[in-house]
Image: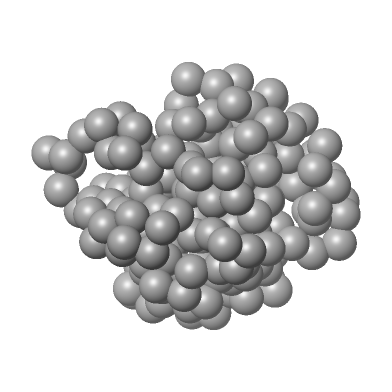
Length: 179
């Protein structure tokens, strides 16, 4: 199992769009007890398909790769994302039967980036959970945004915001609340 995981780890960080996610997804199908995230950062074009949980624990190298893809694209600052948030993403994928990439609109946000966004928009919290690596904004192309919103709320794993005009759903690991 460790050799398989090492192979997957070394082959699934995709910065080049020439590699096919569906082909890799087949080779990265989860063994019972494994959890896989497939991510596409809409700002950097980076793709990642990674087994981030196996044998009852998080995989540190996979978490580092995920943190890099979810970094603040405005200044390339990387922060540690809350592993519980990754589990929520995996659960929402399961609920929707999604084996495709989650499109990431926003993962980690540095305090500087958040302050600029807050100054220019009343939709950005001054003390956003994005700054703590505990929030993410996502969409699933080909899936109804309202369906994604309902699936996220049904998990009762934290806050869920619905932004149909901007075409994304916000998820965080804070207290359960909806907007």
